[in-house]
Image (cartoon, rainbow over all chains, first blue to last red; front, side, top):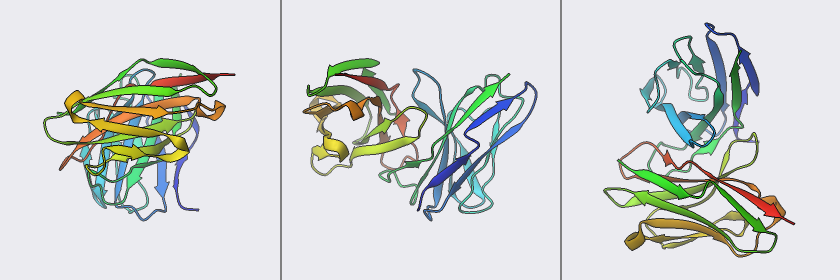
Length: 114
Length: 113
């Protein structure tokens, strides 16, 4: 089955720790995205990548980092610099990154800072 | 920059009744518009999208939406609600040449038996 997988489903972190969220897709899509979802705020773009070894900051990139070493993988690191990291994180991909492309979403990772 | 406003954070309907979710957009150029659905603790799934073809767009699960430029709206409707329609719905907008979607805050739909 083609799709997007995110792991882990639930993640708990102590304050001051960095954590990495995994996102893998086997759709052969060029573009990948990371969003953060908070109750009542919709989705906000953290980072996006339209091609391997290239990525751009979204609206709320501070305290986050990404890499895109392989087409199918786009891991997100939540660093200790992120002031309020507790949220639901969604990864998405699209065929080319064109404006009209449909974005396909993974099942999400819920991060809780203890 | 584009933006989306979804009117009503919660909508409650009876099973079999009309579902109407409101979305208004702001865009300096002709927009592309999307509706996504999210079930609890899951990712988003595309219901339908408008990309400057027909103004009445039909999607999955019996949903449809109409693009009205004069009203800057893209409201989502379904004639008869089903219990399985209980979810959160997001309207999103993008513009030609832009890379990103801008999402509304979402509308949660509950369906009463």
